[in-house]
Image 1 (cartoon, rainbow, N blue to C red):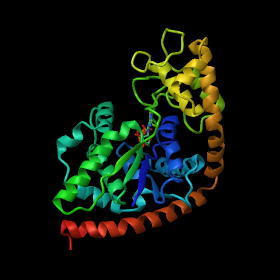
Image 2: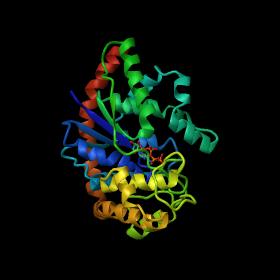
Image 3: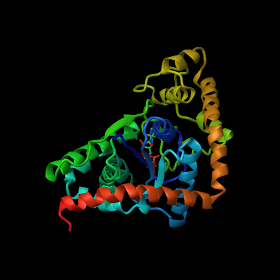
Image 4: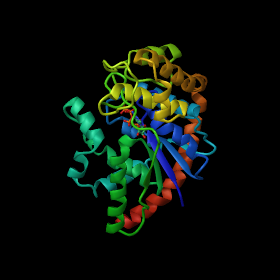
Amino acid sequence: KAQVFSGIQPTGVPHLGNYLGALESWVALQDKYSTVMYSIVDLHSITQPQDPQMLRENILDMAASLLACGIDPTRSILFQQSQVSEHAELSWILGCLTSMPRLRHLPQWKMKSKQKNEGSVGLYTYPVLQAADILLYKSTHVPVGEDQIQHLELAQDLARIFNNQYEEFFPEPCALLSGTRKVKSLRDPSSKMSKSDPQKLATVFLTDTPDDIVLKIRRAVTDLTSEVTYEPESRPGVSNLVSMHAAVSGQSVEEVVRLAEGMDTGQYKNVVAEAIVQTLQPIRLEIQRLRADRGHLESLLAKGAEKAHSLAAPVMTEVRKLVGFY
Ligand code: AQP
């Protein structure tokens, strides 16, 4: 039976990269699959230091953002990861099947432990928890951005390892890649756009006003060539603008480049900013509306957790039996 699962960290308001790389396709999948689960993965978020009050706010803000993008709690199970304790339990069991070197080269660890010069055990085993999130519901399809492919491969490996060690139990989940490539930081097009980027102008958030968006796009790092072309290797800055523009306007990269013929990058930035504003404006207004009623968001998440738990509990009972816990 097809089962979709994906998650997002409550580390701040989602950005255009999260939206184009993941959330837009999450919404569309609700029409295609009967069981669709989206988790606000707060256990993952504490792999980096979080202020408790801020985390609480971010969880509810993330719920508001997902609803505003079009996640419909009558068609998806929207829930907070830590409210279903089986995620942590399965993660421990899968961690015992994972070798240390297998985790060392995965992108999250490489990127974030380098930034800090060290990293916690939680950050190191983050992809194991991610595998547990997916396998706990026997998920078959996982919509992810390009940056998460290697993490999904670990989930596939762990399904195989578990099945070999015990018995055929977990399906091997496959990736559902969104059409959009990785959205890059506006300040440093060699790295990805990120919620927790400390540079204020690097990230377009779903809650940015039209003025914020215009400012950020105008200041986006490009290069000394004024022509608009799509050459991600040699011209990552302007290519990032082209790729965002194509994604928000539903056009191909070639169409967008043709449209920009005769414009210099300065003029083109105004066009890109306008296209992004058009897409994000209704979402921003809806987030504002939903954020105002925290009680409603809390009760939605509680109902989602109940539904998720009812699916997770029987799977964990089987897993405990297979492992030999009586
Ligand atoms: N820049 C991006 N381009 C395309 N897709 C992206 N995703 C994240 N950044 C980009 C996709 O968004 C989904 C949710 O990601 P996440 O919040 O769980 O974790 P992340 O990848 O670590 O996202 P951030 O924004 O970079 O958060 P922080 O700064 O907290 O680490 C995933 O499907 C991801 O592929």
